[in-house]
Length: 436
Image (cartoon, rainbow, N blue to C red):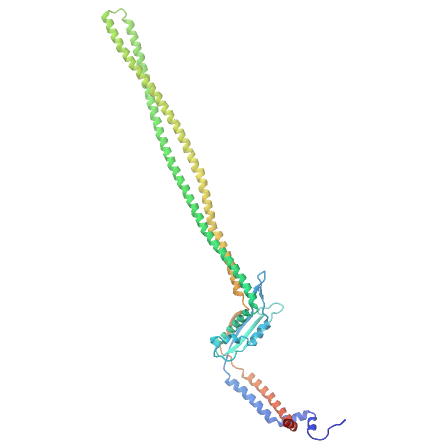
């Protein structure tokens, strides 16, 4: 086995790298490394002086509701890591740069997205994504976060989530249409209920009118009965007077007949002149007796007529009493029952109008609002709370920036030192390769 022990490029290439040789390299390149490190320090100081003060806007979001389970539990489809990657990859910028607020901006704003997974105990605040951005204008910082969330939702609805959200929203709209139809039916039912109340009130008015007519008829019957009662009293009085006159006429007739019989027996042996006078007296007496008999007969007929009229009037009064009793029964029973039934129906209709229909309308409106709440909840990305912005501009972290730039400059200086040393040791071979 042959080993190269002589000097030259091969010996330089096979020379082992030891700690003294590394220190020698660093010592020889101390000026270069120091200058580069100093440049890093100066760059950090310049950044701390020249960097503008920025407002910090912070907001929280989480995957939105795209559908609901059978028990009403909201379902979310977006993965937290996908949302974080979307913001960190500036995928919102193609949508945002078309807006007037960002027309003069050349580069996408930096939005830091970090998610906080929920623990085993489902701690409050878990499963949310914190979005943070900085801008010299506080209002514009808030606008950046707002528009970035809107851009995500717009892009997501145009993508695969559109099917689920569209179906869920469409189903809710169909249910809202059915509920609206039920509300319209309730409105029509309310109108029909008002018409039914008006019809029942008209029937009640007809019952009251019938009751008034019955009162008027009862009044007329009472007046007719009173008239007949007065006629009965007058007729009976006339009949009683006729009976008195009849008794007097009969007594007078008896006396006349008795006087005529006595006069005839006492002048049985009278002379001719006396006989003529007696015959003349007898004829006059007979005429008076005939008149008395006519009077007696007329008085008897009058008594019969008045008695019959009184009985007829009493029968008519009995019929009137029966009619009055029937009408009073109709008024106190039939009309009262009809009035009570109609008032009960009116009360039921008022109860429906004041209690049942409003409750049904309130239930349907609540269902309609519940569907609207579901529709409003449908979104690919949901905000949690409101976006907060720092009251004062955030000061740049000078020491951290200086330390980072110094460390980077030191590493760069060391790299340049070893690169220069490599070039110095392998210069001949590197130049030889270049000549080829």
